[in-house]
Length: 396
Image (cartoon, rainbow, N blue to C red; front, side):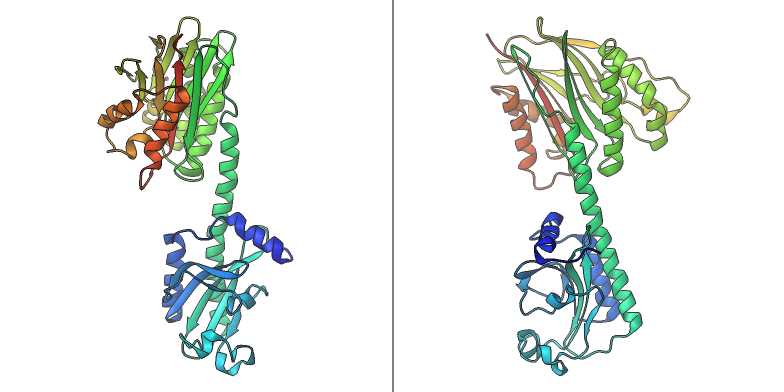
């Protein structure tokens, strides 16, 4: 375990990103169980900040935080083992403590330190009672085991944060320079990591761009999304968009069927000189062209999602993929997005019309992306990943 210095400990605490966050069921269930197992009126998970305790989960406490200097938890984090006070009135360290002499007239306390990734003690899992209590070796083992459960949840968050950083680095880091066109994109995972992605790459004959949505959320979907991205990007260097999607699907058949997952995708190539966009829509069906006069053309899906046929029959060959074409005139805006946008509206395909209305009058690709993201940011709950890509042919 790392040797705690206060500055390093506080850095580790801040890195968790949990201070002043709302209650979460995964922590609440631990304190409820602790209260029931030990038959105490109060149980809580505290995070020990510089001068306060923040209660991440609690039963039997009203406040969300408390001063650190009078807390018993300040002593708990100073040692690696369970800290127990069976009767605070008999302990000289607490004879003037406001928790003891005033409300709630605390008598019993048992706390086990919570260790963050890296080894620093950042918080506690605690029990409290207004009556003195005995606390034996088996009780200490049980409290330690419950504290390990809380620590596992802290580790999960840290691992997800690292995975999110890796996934974010896989997204395009710069906007391609296509004379006469604006290009923009964004991805907002519902969790730290997700199954959506977008990608683009310049080629001598124009711009190739992709938006894909892997069924599911979280780490498993993110792994499949990274695989789909890599294969599509490699396949796009050879042949047409239809050839690229067919090659990718053939390469991914075993991976997708083995995980019972599939991915919708919009994969396209823009010829800047003519404005022609050749595209394959694999079960996606969420692409629009918004014209300067406000009219909207919806680009229909052209076949099942990637991996769908393999999920039904692993021995079946991939379905044929034919490219369609749309030509962007001056001022035309092509926007494709994931179904996470629909989820924050009414959840039906009819809400595509609402997205189209919101895009009317967009001045640029970046403006269009911002308008779609505004829909998500205004929602009380965002259950799915949200990704959007826009290509705008500028008016002369």
